[in-house]
Image (cartoon, rainbow, N blue to C red):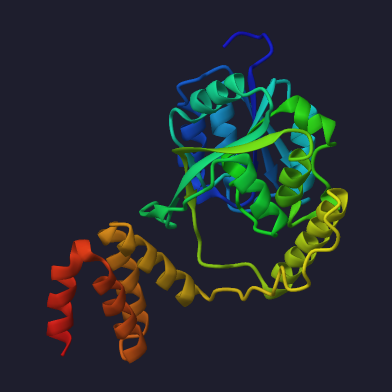
Length: 318
């Protein structure tokens, strides 16, 4: 890439992601479309992430690294927008993996659909070690995405999978810091007022799941922000007030519940190794739990692809 203005500015905040940085950074550097700048913001990491990132700066001139005291995600994203020179903005998280054709595919779509102000993609959810859990199943059409947003459903466009025309983000004033941790939800709602939203049906990113670390207090704050955003959106559109029960409190999954969900999802989508791995971990941690054993066997029986294996295990356990 020469010194001219890049087509894409990639913005990636980093906070204590040393374990996953190599995969995340290399998945961007190895993109089939190469005309981009890579703006990386270290948010006061204490695990050696900054030192690792400095090594990459010396290897690839497209990387610009900014070390900051811990300030939070939204502030860094807005700083990234101010520094960005590209016509398009691509988001990336420091523990995810972009497929090699992500940028090329999204750019083609945006060029063919100039009314689109944000395009995400289908995502493959992976576990902390990178094993596949399953396809999420994202809606692709603007109408479906907007309906989900107006009903308060987050993650309907996976934020680190998204690409935007920079002009659209500038038009709405970027991210609103006071709405963190629902800043991405708010961003997509406001973008829907000036253009269309889309998800591509292809998997273009591997999205890493972790055992739930969000606190109940943070989830309550997030839901309250989403309620505020949804109320504003309904009134702006002349729809009145949304139903009071539109956003009920959502319980936080415990690590055991998260792992059970991963295992069941993986088994149902044919990722037997992943499913058995997480069921095995559950059983090691709770070997005398009849509930856990029943849960494992029930999940295996649901998968017709692996019915013979499940019957064998079921018989052996009697």
